[in-house]
Length: 320
Image (cartoon, rainbow, N blue to C red; front, side, top):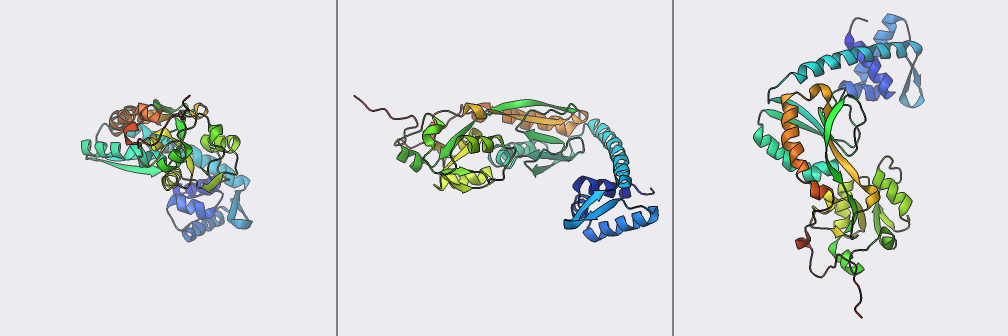
């Protein structure tokens, strides 16, 4: 092997199982990737991948050995990169952050504005992605995650718990006569749900297993769009309280958050990067800013003054 880029190509194809996806990951066009792979195989005299129907590339034994060697080399290069970055105490340069769409839309961006005003030399790149990006491979420098990290090489802290509740437009809650006590009392109401193929989202799984599917009148894989649909009066949406309580267009359909869906919000980075000046500054300003909104995240900060008087948020009781 004469060129590290050749091994990077083999590793990218092995990881994605597709030449098209590998080319996209390496920021080259498909024809360039195809040409490089053919030249490499011709020079080595071995086939590195079997070409299967549907554009699938499956590594041969030679391809697997090359990919494993490439991954070891990548690990060493990334470790060196993190070590150098971890010694960089400057408050300048690029900082790549990953967050969910929901958090970025509702709470994060205002704290990023504060961060920008305080640290004008730092360029923040925000990757809106519900996937767990790899901090070891520097797909991001900092991640805001809705789950406790399990990787042993990560470092971070819990910012808050995350509560969930049903929300609907004020008119719909008024027509109900006020907020219900239990989710079962909402079984006959029009509901907004996730796409049926959604997996790996606790709230989506809970909704599918707990509430009947017949009342679901609208489906989308975007929580922000679920909020928008609830505001438009399409139905009730199951939302994190920091999203629902923070928007004046909806009110709670339940008197209390759903205890089974209680989650967490974490800010994490790779342990090698915790000494980086940009990372420390972000943890201090943005991390502390989000932690300061703990009551909102945990469903205890309810802006009742924005709810019309005609809407009773507690179930009505008849007088005798």
